[in-house]
Image (cartoon, rainbow, N blue to C red; front, side):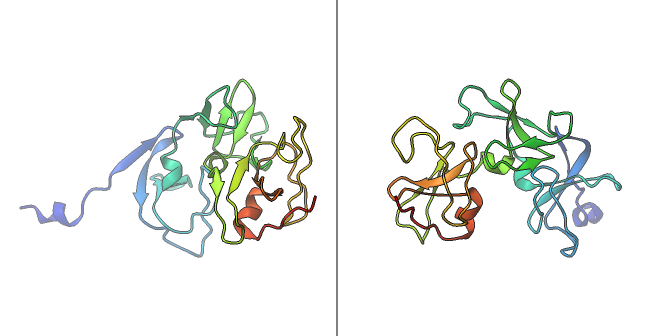
Length: 198
């Protein structure tokens, strides 16, 4: 029996279509004091498994979930066309604006070439229903403000009654039709929702 091979198993290398170098899987980020940013979603990699580049001077690293993203999705917000995973924005300035949250991005996007429609990878996977302890009804993900509160096919300015700011006519938000309230995507996950007086 060769004990050297049993004691130190070879490190398995992985390939990912978004990166030219081989990747290895690590079980945890090694130094918690350094801020490590995922090359896919641009969010912190604080703990958990990740895939990192094997090349010494390459800082490419992906969350486990970003490594496993599908190359194409169908999304209810854009039913006409499938969205393809692009590993960099397909625009000359190297930036895209997410059609869900309105924020910019510089890395992975689910993109429609025909419509110039883009979603952050985390926005594409938002739950359609949010249950919250501080609200009696489920909150539904809404892709626009048409026909929600006034019963007509017009867009209305929906105010977030958590932060008191408008959500924007083209931005997604969570709403409760029973209570006639709306909230930003971020506000739903952080603060209480207040009821709209109409």
